[in-house]
Image 1 (cartoon, rainbow, N blue to C red):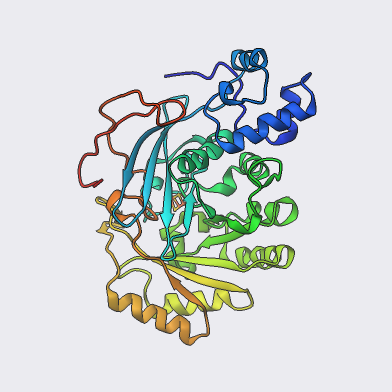
Image 2 (cartoon, helix red, strand yellow):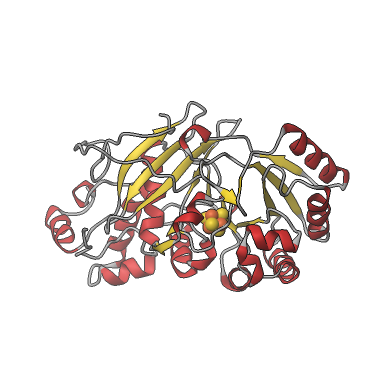
Length: 371
Ligand code: SF4
């Protein structure tokens, strides 16, 4: 296990960076901030700083705290990165490509997740710890080192973003700061399992980023069995806070439903979802469940929904006037699709390589994972 010995600069919002770099003047902090946003590989690469200053900074600080530990690519264009954190924990970040060729970075906010949704591989791992803002931001930098043009960011990887709000806010502050990354809030979406207190907080004080609710079903009894978080975050109250969020931020909300064969594709489920959506400005995103070995629900192995189940579900929702999109099976071959993160392959061999900023580990993918 490795321990961080020097403060890490990557995830610090500008004010915190300026503070830690004092007595260096403000404009120096701006230069460092901009270099981080450009993904410079070391202090030595900050060519507008005098060499003694670069050496001084290198002696006192680390730029990054994580490394790419492995990489898997699916023929459909999806790339998954395995990232090793300073304490040996491993997380995943995924690059998705849509039909128009636009790239989206899917980032993790926790190592593992405490919420145990039955259809999610990450949930079976439990929570190890929250990620800090540097560890979240560096996922984006790592993905950008392999794909410079990333249009959107979704916080939909491992973990529940709204259970790690302070670090999430710092990351968002860095990403949207025009002195560095300068990303538009419109290009950023958080996906939540429905943490009422978190959505309230976001509505009151957070940046106006997009919000997606992983609803799955709006049948309370079934949802409580599939997503135990429902018990402490009841659906009627959740709808109220979503309504408030929408009033506050003025953005359309995405309702996501992972469709599980024979479980939540019934007429009752589509009816309940349509009733939940009434009065909100939403788009419904259906995600046919991606098979992950060994996932069970109350003793039954989970199954993909049939084409017929999916088509019927879409038809009923559209019949109620809802806008429905269906996510393709992106990244299936590498377990990079929704609900599959956390099925980590083993890393077998270490090599040094100039390709990544700190080092790259070649890995050998076992079992059914393809590269
Ligand atoms: S679906 Fe999301 S909230 Fe649920 S266990 Fe998985 S990572 Fe956690």
